[in-house]
Amino acid sequence: MSQQPPAMPSHLRGALDLSALKPAPAGQAPRPAAPGAAPGAASGAGAPAGSWVLDNATQGDLQQLIQLSSRVPVLVHLAAPSNPVSQQLDDQLAPAVDALGGRLILARVDTEADPQVLSAFGLSAGPAVVAVLAGQPVPVLNQPVPAEQLDQLLDELLAAAAQNGVSGTVPPLAPPREPAAPAADGQEPAAPPLPPLHQEAQDALDAGRYEDAQGAYRRALAENPADAEAKVGLSRAGLLARTSTMDAQAVRERGATEPDDVQAQIDVADLDVLGGHVEDAFQRLVRFVAAHPGAERNTAREHLVDLYSIVGDQDPRTAASRKALAMALF
Image 1: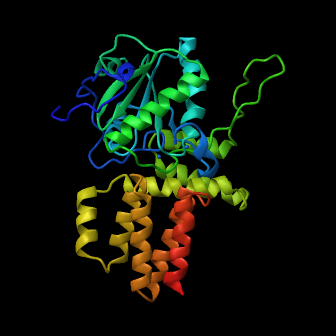
Image 2: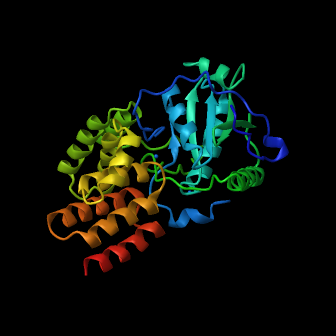
Image 3: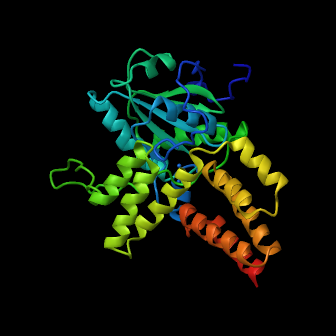
């Protein structure tokens, strides 16, 4: 690779070659398990509901996430399910990543099912956790660490990322992970299962079957129209379905040459939200609403409101954009 490895703390250095990873199919967008919490957990209180942890990532997902690592750091857990240390790493890292509200992504790969991924990362066995910054991977952990040490490690990782221009955020990639309450015997219980249709939708998302996921969420809403998580899940699955076959370059070129075409602007906004450029997406559609009266204005407004639900009403970018939209409308 011609790109120089990012400057990292001494205990995080050691670039590897990821060229052995199989690329995802052309035009495929990261799935929300692949591919869509600030130092410590401070920003988590204002973060949209959702998770930034991708379970059961594939080699194709990893290729997409490596590209996304120019926007946010990506942690890859090279898991060995037969080793209890893997579950301990998951239990420690998942809540820490989600607490950062989109400034960091965690992807878990089953290396016992796909051992070639280990070779791509230059390792002979898992479990191990590797950080990827701007396409450059560096080893981070191979065993759990005290909470204070993990917080310091993530702080250093985010600081190093910022020094190298990797300081964006991305919207949630999956529904929120339920926190587990301690069991009476002190053992951590298993997370409560999702409702059947939500689980069906999540399984479909994990497999990249976005239309099937939409169908499951629609059935959940038919059973319970007040199911807020199903509404958000349907919007997220819709975003992934729309962008999964897009040619990003062609979409952006059309958006630049056809500023008055509502669908052209919506398509670019979708790509921006998927890639973490949330403000750009919101501003694009607010500008369109301000400049175009009539039916097209309403089409852009409705799509923007749908994107608000994906990012989350508690996200400050959503609140700011809602104010700008109100001014554009009135």
